[in-house]
Amino acid sequence: MPGILLDTMRGQRSDHIPLWLMRQAGRYLPEYRALRADKGGFLELVYDSDAAAEVTVQPIDRFGFDGAILFSDILIIPYAMGQKLEFLAGEGPKLSPTLVDHALSSLEAVPERLSPIYSTVTKVRERLGPETTLLGFAGSPWTVATYMVAGEGSRDQHQTRAMAYQNPEAFGEIIDAIADLTIEYLVGQINAGAEAVQLFDSWSGSLAPTEFERWVIAPNAKIVAALAERCPDVPVIGFPKGAGEKLPAYIRETGVNAAGLDETIDPLWAAKALPDSLPVQGNLDPLMLLSGGPALEKAAKRILEAFADRPHVFNLGHGIGQFTPIAHVEELVAIIRGWRG
Image (tube, rainbow, N blue to C red; front, top):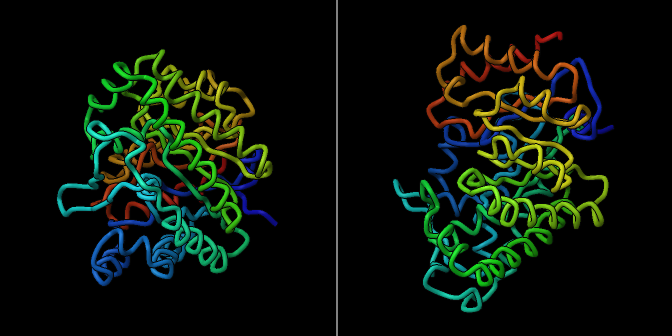
């Protein structure tokens, strides 16, 4: 029998609201910090499939979430495309050579860098009960491209946006290459045991409407269509952070099976603006979870009430912060588990 989260992503409603949190396997957990320290670094942890599987199930063991999301990183795709990937303390991820200075054709692909990720998925699936849905994921092409072009994250993605304006043909080749490999990567995760997948477009909010159509909607639609053909029973969750009023068009034109909502989306607006049968996921502000207290319960219940008449997976509007107290997560779990809409 599938888990309730998977049923919800397929459009079923239940009195029991499924719950998982983005970045639920991470630095706020002492057991994660201990394992990462033992492995010596983030990438070393990701590429040790036994350790990555352990990290993936840690929040399930502690909180009993309804979904376990693969422990990995969106930058595995550029790493497999041939860029060097480093995670530097206090600086975040770095990719080289940057595509603002080098052509895509200068990279030599290393597809075997994807294999350990599939091994992690298989090992996690073996450790989970059938009630827990295993989610795979990938970064969406626009967001991944912003790192590949600039070599690192930035607040406004100015180098990548400028390249897309100045040389759309070359930039389109980058987007297409990311999309093609992402399809294979997600199919590989699904074949290894992932039951649903999420596309993270963390920087989609930086684009003007016409560019959003071209660099967010179009490549995500390509990925969703390919997955629908090759893995028709596997729901795809689209998470275009910062999409705002462009969200209905994103959902309509990409064909995603469910929509992840960031914390800036008013759930009451979303309940009216999105198709009635569309499963939605979200969208508590991670800072509200960090803060806790009566305001946390009020905010969580507002979201639950807004989505009471549609399939809904409770989640955050973005990833859980590393300084979030364990007690606040336990409080949130109790609120959701005790909800009777």
